[in-house]
Image 1 (cartoon, rainbow, N blue to C red):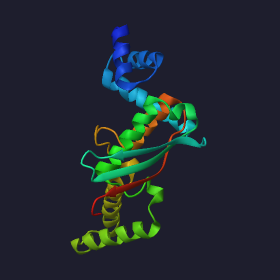
Image 2 (cartoon, rainbow, N blue to C red; image 1 turned 45 degrees about the horizontal axis):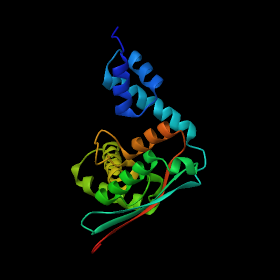
Image 3 (cartoon, rainbow, N blue to C red; image 1 turned 180 degrees about the vertical axis):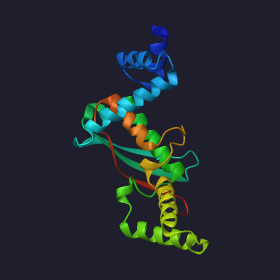
Image 4 (tube, rainbow, N blue to C red; image 1 turned 180 degrees about the horizontal axis):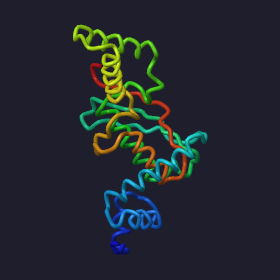
Length: 198
C-alpha cells in the first residue's frame, strides 16, 4: 500500500481542482497512482454532474472573444444557476476556453440534439452512397454509416468536439468537470461565430 502524503494530495488537487478529501480518497483508492486517481475523480465528477443536470440555469454570462488577428469573433451564452457562480474565475475561464474552442474549431451546433433531422438524414444518404459499390452487406454498411455520422457530430457539435487545448478531453467533459467543481448545473445555451469573408 503506497503512503499518501499531503504533498501528493496537494499535487492532485492542483491538477484537478477537486476537494482535498476527494483527492485523498481517490489517491488511496488508486494506491498512489495519479492517472488512476484522476480517472476516479472524473467518474465521480460525472456522477455529481448527472445529479445536477435537471436543475434550471437562469443566470450566467455572455462572453465575447475576438481572436488576436481581429478576423474571427465569438459571442457565447454560458448559463449556470446563480449569479455568484457566474462571477467566479473558474466560470469565466470556462467561458473563455469555450469561446476559443468555437473560434478555433468552428462547430455549427451546441449538441447532437440541435442538429436538424434533415441534415442527419442527408449525411446518412451521402455516407450510404459512398459505400454503396463496395459490395459490403447491409449491416456492415449501416455500421460504417453510424461511424461516419459519429465523426460528423464530433466535428460539428461543440459538446462532442475534442478540446483543442487538451486532446484527452471532450468539451462535454470540460463542462462536467466545471459542474462537479462549482456545484451547479452549467449549460451552453447558444453561440455565434463570425469570421471575415465567411
